Length: 258
Image (cartoon, rainbow, N blue to C red; front, top):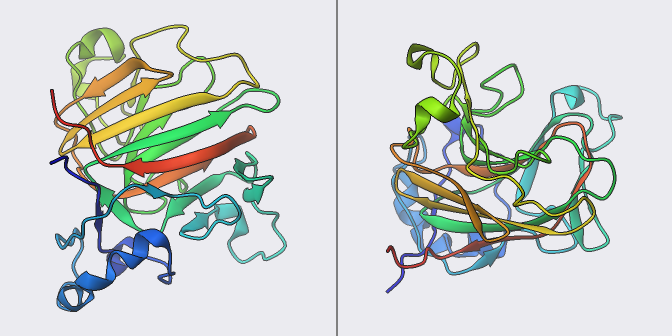
């Protein structure tokens, strides 16, 4: 039997928003009684098993919440993320993140995305936890880069990961490697030419299995690491300067390990 994604019960210490009903959340109701005694604990270990789930329902941002610093105290700030024409769209500005209400572990995430206009920067974050951990905006997490020309790079944001050929793919002395401000946080991908031309759809796949993470772009394995300092958390999408369209964001059971 294949392992299935494990949504983890949220903790107030991770600044959880108001819980909302969704197909993913309905599977958590059976665990509600057990959650009562754990509600105040960070890193709560209670889990519930779910099957495949569309994290974007095609018409709304239900199941997600935005964290956009520019919107603090200003209700007139335009949204950074919208549902439009059956797609979830990161408008790029104001900069911030769209974050799942739920936390997950042990899953395959598949994301179909494209650059409808000028290319730029964006990313998908896994194992996200503490909001605004870095530079007052980025949640503690491991970023899988979508920036055109660099899709599949890792960016360490408070977390870290090990790849087999680290010295050739991470700049600086090993003493500078890490996920904190001023450290060498980027681990470049393994391939060139895996992305499709701007305007065409790309498929990003990310498998999180315990403390290991593997990444594919359009079927090419572009990155992989072990000993990640986190093994669970929320999933987030960035608004980081350029518009990106997402037509599918799907959580799947992990395939059998090789």
